View 1 (spheres, one colour):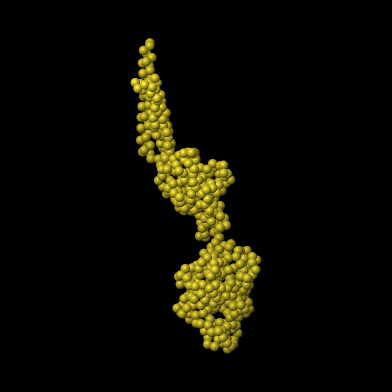
View 2 (cartoon, rainbow, N blue to C red):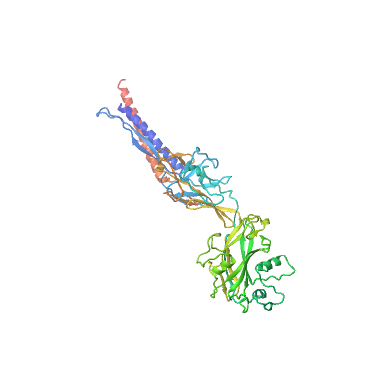
Length: 509
């Protein structure tokens, strides 16, 4: 009986070492597999019950294979923005199809982040698994993560992101107008008590009936006569409409006279001011006037924000070290232009032929460095900054450490497309490996938890990097030698037991 048990123990040794060699072979074969986790066969004894102490019955050995899923591989830099690795815990959530994923469809979890675009523009890794994430709202661009509902995840499509435009909502002006500007005859006539103040043929400035907008409009249509007042200085502001079309709004300025005897004498630091759209861009008013008022300056040359914004924009604001708030918020200087036909004509309206949406443009004349000033120096525009852009085509896709997938366009517009989801497990080493260097949930792994990257213990996303295999060839080759010797020793047990059985059978001959 003991000889038979010895032979069986040798057989178990052969089987166990064969499993160990298989694990080593798998490791060596996957030394260059992205995100691969090495396996190892651990041995445990098999013990038979002993009926008497004077005899011994060999039990043998068995191999239990473990995959070290939690072991982090080295991070390697790559040249692709779509190569992703996870620095820390967690797995990418993936499916075998990009769209139409039902609640009953299997989800896989992987650390293999070598993603590329398929023919439909979806992110898919080398094993054909599609990356899942929370998609951005197509209207607002916001992303709502829902860690409790796996069905809120969808395939991330970036290859077919449409071109983007960004209409202008903010304008910042940095310019100086000359405090020594000579008074024009039209401005003088506007404040004169009698026509003696005006030169023959000059018509007084009137923001309603004889404005600087009228002058620009008459020039554009080549009117035979143009008695409207010409601005002393103009600041051209380029803006983008909702379709990416380029428009120009002009801030026109006309120095007010400080003349004795005028019915309402103005100070030396006051200018007539108008905001004027290009001729033909507005349906109403037809002369292109968006707003009219006055610009006021303190004796030190700085803009009197309260008086200017109240006069030109119809808002009363106090000077602030920061820029005005978002367009449309109360107490801010806002240019409001309606889309044609959307509301009663109570504000300037884009021309119907343009087919564009209404827009609010916050104009900042004071919070930028310098802003609009009045010094005894040449009238000059130092800078006009706007945030609008023309139509742009998709040029690249980037993923940040928080998993936000962002489309970048050649007009410098960026648009968030989705956020990558990360799944974590109580016991990642209990996951079941499947084809494609991926894993499935088991009882030993526990239920997964969905998290945004860098939150709740999940790892951060690292773009343009891949996680290398955790296989060390020197360790595997050493283990292979040991396993080979152990296998040979187990086979020796069998041959020795066989020889002993032959000796036993020879006794009866």
